[in-house]
Image 1: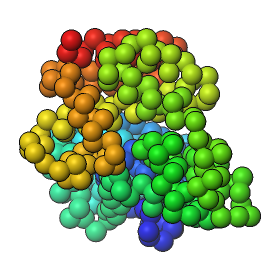
Image 2: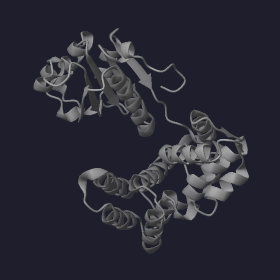
Image 3: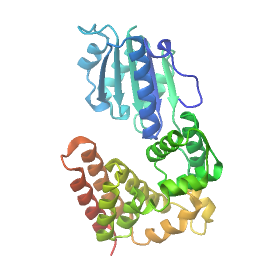
Length: 329
């Protein structure tokens, strides 16, 4: 919802909000904003959260039924693309005539899966769509600047570029770093020197350093980098995110035509130009089957660190070993 006015109660209650786009961080922020609007209308509002694969006809009936605890309800359905085919007509019918005191938020993470229901929902006047396009590599400094302004601060362009170099391309990590800088230097413009003072020398302990070591097949180094990263406060989810991003870049590189310029490859992969040679070198030891195996290991670990496992560190260690084993040679 960046770049638009803040949503009001009329925008949320009695309507259906459709959030689409691949950027998980931006989608989650939009969900949080909408929940805050509902809570502002009714502090006692009832909130529920589910995924598309769990939506049934019975669940749809409950959606508009009066609640014993609150007249205002907010229902979030994530991974709309996984909605069972038999539930699609019910969701569309409800969206055409939503309950007055219910805020239904449907989250679709992009891709071709589930586009049929998107087409039907977009035709309804009662559905409001908010799109979060993928943030390209060259747009990351602008994203950083916007995050700093969001918290009332100011940052110079070289400083925003330096922050991307130091922290990496994960939006959640960049937003957290921008928040920290904006609050610590609220009375001055943030310079590249300030960024270097805060984040210089820390890149090796960040999630992308773990990912680089794993992709290169250096299991011992990856495990050591992981311990350092976790000890310095790097959230486990950033490690899985960084490694997934590295593997996806390797996969996309296989579809790039031979002889393409580094700048063209960078745009195709969605990475800064300086990283193209690094990815090209890494790709020599990977084939499509290995990348697919490694991505499955990362997906499993990602689910585990988000609550499916009691020991996130162990889940990440096993992931790194699985990824390095999937590499050729």
